Image 1 (cartoon, rainbow, N blue to C red):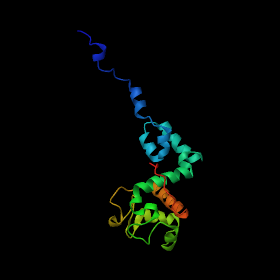
Image 2: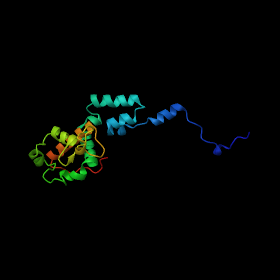
Image 3: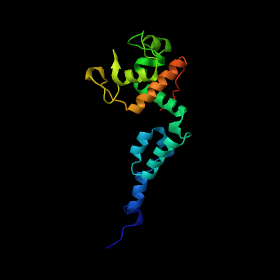
Image 4: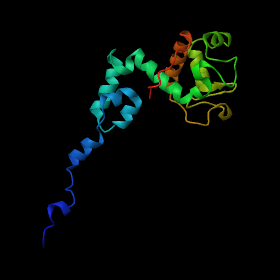
Length: 173
C-alpha cells in the first residue's frame, strides 16, 4: 500500500488532554464580565470557577466586587432591558413616572429595594422582569432577569437618579 504524500494526509487527531484544555479556556477578562456566566462557561475548569467565586467573596479589589464593575454591569443591563422605555431616565409610556429622583420620590419608589420590587414584579404599565414574577399578564413576555441582575439594575437606576441621569457610556457591553 502506498502512503499518501504529507499534504494529502488528514490532520493527525489531537490527544484528548489537549482537546479538554482547549474546550475550557476562559480568560480572566471574560470571567470577571459576569461571574455567573463565567462559572457556567468555565464549568470544565473547576479551579478557575472556585477561584472566581472565592475571589469575589474575599477580595475587595476583585472586579465583580467593585462599585465600578457593578455600575458598568448595571449600565449594560439597563441598555439591554430598559432603555427602550426609559432612555435618559425618562418614560415614554407614562411621563409622570420617570426615573428622575423627583418622580421616584413622588411615586414612593425612592429606595433601591422599591426600585428592585417594581423591576422584579412590575407595576401599572411597567412589566416585571423577575424569574418568579406573577401574575403572567403583569410580567414581561421577553427574557426574565436573574435576581442579581435586577439588584444591579436597581442600584444603577438609584445612582443615576441621584446624579441627574448623566450620559451612559456607549462602550458598555
